[in-house]
Structures are given as structure tokens and as C-alpha cells.
Image (tube, rainbow, N blue to C red; front, side, top):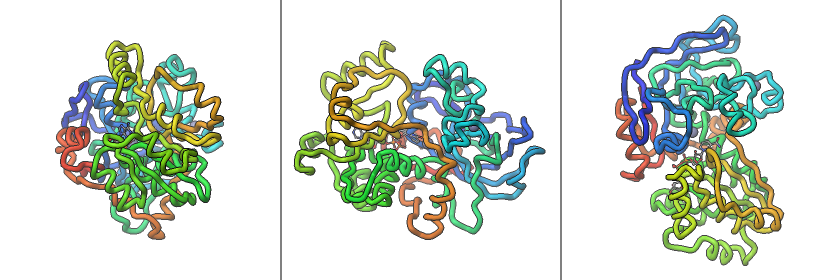
Length: 389
Ligand SMILES: NC(=O)c1ccc[n+]([C@@H]2O[C@H](COP(=O)([O-])OP(=O)(O)OC[C@H]3O[C@@H](n4cnc5c(N)ncnc54)[C@H](O)[C@@H]3O)[C@@H](O)[C@H]2O)c1
Ligand SMILES: [Zn+2]
Ligand SMILES: [Zn+2]
């Protein structure tokens, strides 16, 4: 079959790979009909995530048709149309039973590598390095889905793929980001990053009762989407001082809830950001936490910092003094996607939200390498890419 594969920094190829087969009785095989490129894939594209290997199949946002199921699969049958969460979860460990699906204790066969780095291993993820399980991803014609009774969400009816595909990741991720921020009626919420995750975070902040949403980025069309579609006020960090603007807008209090929807590849300016870049090159620091620092500085005293943005290792110059003395709460994590599938699908079915608004590019899977480049460079006003094998 054909798939998009990783070959090192900025080298994604469309090539022939072995077609997946049932390995365990709880597997399903999906013929992928639509798959998206995520900001998380760009961390792989920049070679920031350890333990990738040449030829690894990329992708973790996929949907399609079930073409084969293992002997123990009970809830899926051939022909079912499903969206596949990016988190692989067993459904029966302590973490899964407590709805903490992205922390599943049973789905990462390489848990020891992750444990050495982080103390404990999170769940296995599709197409996201060997440390996270070494699972082939969904930017391919076919995908093997382990624990098939726990992950895939059946889609009945004829909702178009662009409306349901993002249940695999970025819609639940935006929702969990707002929930983690503890957004309540009347809050002012600041969202750093206006990629797809930022856009769904904005939508979700409104759903949870925010009074004001302020979105921060520098890419004009992303800011425009946040304003026009997301009804957010915006700050362009390339032309305005973010701290000063936020203080002005909130009568010096700072936003109640601050959300980092940017993560490890945050763009920064000034001495500290330059030091980050140098240290990253020398492997003295893994992440560039420009947004984290700024969000902590801006957040109102006693407020909440929510971090959906992905970080991979160690970050320097972390303002722990500000975090502690301002009594901030921090919540983060890979998304517990399974927790949000039913309630968010219901919102889509009821017409409360149409997630297809983020899609700017649709193309055949074969054009994947070129679209990775375009998405990375933000050429052609590219915000979200959907590929069809
Ligand atoms: N927690 C999870 O489960 C989960 C799931 C999906 C994605 N993510 C992560 O969420 C983040 C966003 O994903 P995306 O798909 O929207 O990515 P994206 O790359 O499309 O968007 C990131 C945006 O951040 C902006 N940005 C960069 N530096 C900034 C700064 N200093 N201030 C404000 N904005 C800045 C960029 O201009 C860009 O628009 C990524 O880190 C991704 O890995 C996490
Ligand atoms: Zn993703
Ligand atoms: Zn589990």
C-alpha cells in the first residue's frame, strides 16, 4: 500500500510500505478514507521527537471503513464507518477506567524507553515515534487499530468526513484545553496559537461560558479565522507587546485562563529565545518555552494555565517563581480523546458546531510531502490539510 513516511528532518515521502494485518485478536484494520496533518506532525517534521526511525509511517488523525476485525472484537464489523482517536487505550487498566485514556498503562509496548525519559510512560500513539509505541500511523491507505473496541467511534448517517474527522484529535484537544483551563461563566480566556488546536480551543471556551476570548498569533489568516469565525479579539505578537496589550485589555488583572496551544516549537524573540535556539542545537535544552513563559507572566493571580501544546523534554528559564507566587494552577496532557467522542459528536450532529471550518486544503495522499512543506511554511494560507488516500 502507499503511505507517508518519515525520513528525517523535513523529509516526508509517499512510498510503498507493507499493508497492515491483524496481529492481535482485538485489532481492526481500517481502509483510510480521510486523514489530516497536525501541528504535532510538525514536531516530527522538525525532528524534535526522539526515537523516530527512517520509514516510519506518519499520521494520527484518521477515519475510514473497517475492512477486517480480529476474533475478539465485539463492537465493530466490516463496513462500519469510524473515526479513530490518536490515543491507543486498552479500556481496562486503572487509567482507562478513570477516563485518563492518554495515560493508558497497557498500550505502549516500548514503555521502558518512555519511562526512562519521563518517569512513567503515557499511552501509545499512532505514528508518533518508537518511544510512544512504534505504531504505524494513519497517513496511509490502511491502518491497524489495536484495542478496536475502545477507540474507534462509529459514525452513522452521512455527515461528511470534514465534519467528523477532527474528532480523532484537534476538536477534543481544543475542548480538553478549555476544560483544563477551568473556564467558567464570565471568564476572560487568552489562547496562544491560532492553528487548528487554537481554533477549537476558542470554540470550546465559548461553549464553556467564557465572556471574552483573546487569541494570539502572528499569521494574518489564522488571526482572521479567530476573529471572524471564532468571534475572538486578537493580538498580533509580531507587532504588539503581548503582556502590555493583555494588561490593557483586562484592566491590569490579566486573563483568568491562559492556554498554550503552541508548544515546543514556539517562535520567540529577544535574548532568551536566541539562547533557547542555541541550547536546542547543542542538545542542552529540548523545548523552546517562549509561550509558556509569557502565559505564566500574563495570567491573573490565582488563574489557570492549560497546556495542550506538546512539549518533548526539558525547558530552561522556566518562571517557577511567578507560577508559585501568583498561585497558578497548571493542567496539561495528551488528550483523553475517547472521553469526548460521544458528547462532541452529539454537538456536531445537532449542528451546534461544524468543525470543517478549519479545512483550508484537501488533496490526494500522494501530495502529502508537498502539503507538509506548505503547512510547515504556512504558505498559501494553509491552516489544516485533509488528505484522501
Ligand atoms: N495535547 C494534545 O493531545 C495535542 C493534540 C494535538 C495537537 N497538540 C499540539 O498543539 C499545538 C498546536 O497544534 P496545531 O495543529 O494548532 O499547530 P499549528 O502548527 O498549526 O499552530 C501553531 C500556531 O502557533 C503559532 N505560534 C508560534 N509561536 C507563537 C507565539 N510565540 N505566540 C503565539 N502563537 C505562536 C504559529 O504561528 C501557529 O499558527 C502543537 O504543539 C501540537 O503538537 C496537542
Ligand atoms: Zn494531532
Ligand atoms: Zn488502559
